[in-house]
Image 1 (cartoon, rainbow, N blue to C red):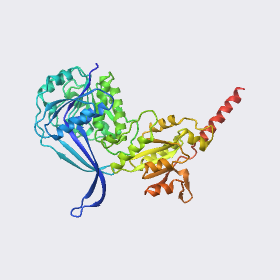
Image 2: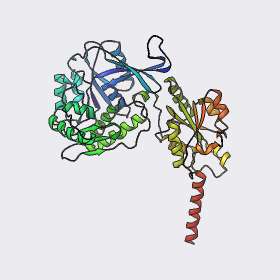
Image 3: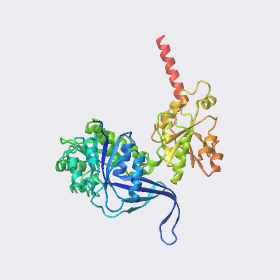
Image 4: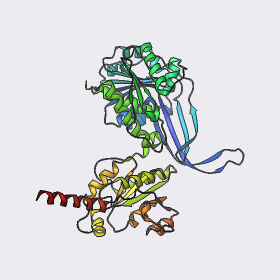
Length: 470
């Protein structure tokens, strides 16, 4: 089927206000947030549609919109993201969620908007887009849209696979839905399961109960950092772990939407339910590792081509606007090895983004000799950019990174522990970084790993092989 992914559900307007806290209010024991930036984005089912559209998919959103400024802003944001909206009339005001954030943490969430109101009737065009969908994601946020009788009947009759992301205050999924995707807390509320045991045993027991009660094909219970448990026909659950542990979780908001949207897209493409859940776990893990909802507006283009210094500067500007900490490190990274990865992972944990300042081919030849680099700069930059701990790569042509550092002005400059002198770091960049109040640090490294050693060992082995063949 070649139609769009159709997302059905309650859209909200989310607003992140980011800033810095440096003092406490004189008339109350609360922090004072100095606002640096504010970002609007679609929330609820709108976020699910936004995340699906970001995967280069044709996406339509069936939602209820109010005739107010918030509804107008939602429509504007969705149109800019390439989402085609099929609106039902929403009486009352647009629901808004405003989060005040500092240092990567949410200080307070303010909710606006009245009690949920029953939406109007879906149009003929809305029913038509449901009929030609390649997959349908019901993203229920408990505000009543998916209780609308005409809309619910259309969902029950749809020929496309239906993925139902439920809400404890919402209705049951339509019978025959291919997959429903509660998290463990939602599953407990939906089934009333208060029994003991491990998360796995609870997810298995309650997941099968929900599958039987709702008469759906399968239930995928998301367990956060522990992945998901898929309960389907048969008694043995499928446990799907995440591809890797996320070292630093900034914001998990939207991870469930990413999971459900990816699963729906995979099912629409003909994947098995088990395959769709595996893809969904990988996508949700990558989303959280990249900063979740708080990082949406500062995600960088991860094309396989060389990441330009301009891209690094844009990243730094956005992170600074959020009051975040910019970390940078540098090197040739000619043959990427475990020592490099350990240093990069440790550096990323020191702030909100990591920029790698990479010696160009010309720079490497000047430092290492005419036989280096082994790998050209485009390949080296591509490998670095593929690492989850690296947010941007800036290539420089000079013998030292002084010029690129002066442009980026990182808060922290990091080198592996092998650069530490007897009394601490003694790097040529120290004086420069300290001019703008930055810090220079070293992090532990894995002894015995080096590019020169790797090249030398490879040459020795090659020589032995040649001698053995003679």
